Image 1 (cartoon, protein in one colour):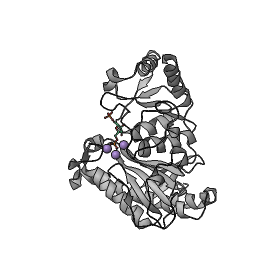
Image 2 (cartoon, protein in one colour):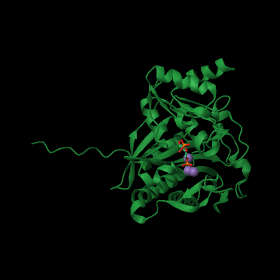
Image 3 (spheres, protein in one colour):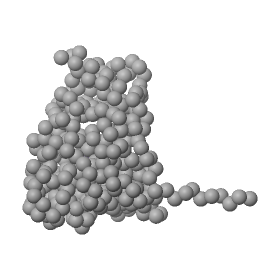
Image 4 (cartoon, helix red, strand yellow):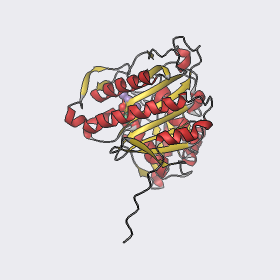
Length: 332
Ligand code: AHG
Ligand code: MN
Ligand code: MN
Ligand code: MN
């Protein structure tokens, strides 16, 4: 009998980056190296996430972060691991993290890039074994090479991102990113310690029948959000909400759908942070043919003022985000 032909070993992230190297602006290999450093940190976090219950690193860390959130131990572990990987990789001169009040200088003052990061997204799901993620945004520095990075490097605005993506620690671990030339997805093979190209070109369905929001905030929502969601329900759309932005976003990217985090009484500008949640996912969704809106228009056009500022976020299939915007216009 024919021996079964082993599934062809696909393109690794390494090979993919080298093949695509020529597409990167400033193709000097530095952005390639930076993406490798992020992938390495993702592999390390994946291992920590998978063994958290055994290593006793679930649960609260016992401190609050600048957001006023109770840090989970894995928030702190992921933060340390990412900063260390970026420091050792040499390409990032500074990092802005959800878990740090201020910029962290890596010591690589000759690095040409800065990285804004949500080291661990979906912290409320860590202890209950539900998918969590990492979100990252990459900018070329605007301050002189050799100097210390400043706020200006991080407050360039969403459309200045040169790369963005996320890692989803889910039923399988995936790295999904863009450098402005479409969206590619890689699936991690733990036995080989490699990310393999599994989705060469990801685009979001124009339409969708899934809405993702925390309906516990229903009575805080602006009228136009309730109008839009009521219309989704009249059409018998599916409500799907994991409570990890990366997991909800990734599902909607493949099935079509809309994720909403509107203003609430507790978070009057929405809960999600502009620099390391809204901007990177908005860059990605536009590259995948979708849309991402904030308070008054595309979230990539929101002017950044503070490192940890928040923005409402309505993101996903273009037809659904447009339908939501029509509700906003009708209400004005
Ligand atoms: P993080 O864990 O990085 O602080 O982000 C949590 C965010 C996002 O992941 C998720 O969609 C949202 O918070 C859930 O908020 P609610 O619990 O208010 O629904
Ligand atoms: Mn988050
Ligand atoms: Mn986080
Ligand atoms: Mn948090």
